[in-house]
Length: 143
Image (cartoon, rainbow, N blue to C red; front, side, top):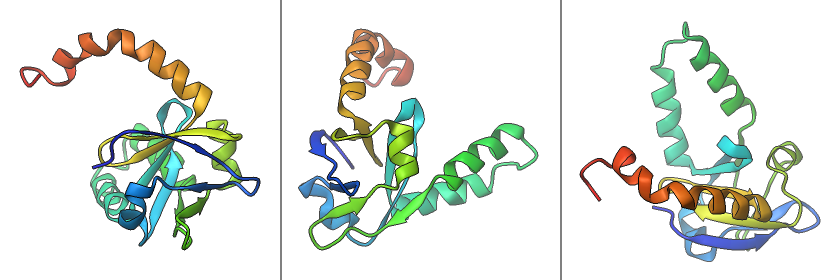
């Protein structure tokens, strides 16, 4: 489970240190791909394989399944962190997410998300307003 918000910086070569507490879990490999709201998703390899299996059972006759799968897999990059816990984020993915220097790496349960720091701040400010209202819709009767 990935938790928290971690302010990090991209270096000049497009590399990013993974949050220290997750380096061991991700040391065997991970997949970075496009996420919603112009962020990047970072999945441990096992979680990416689980998602791949789930999408393999979706009907390819459904246009939305084809479209989602194309973007999701075509933009995916498998990475192995170096000995220092850094990953290289491909140029196309950095461009998609608007990553320049300051990033916010957030825990999102089964994945990490990489955001441009100002974009994350703006998103959080907007969504915190409706956070309490959403709990009943998202988790009815649980919270």
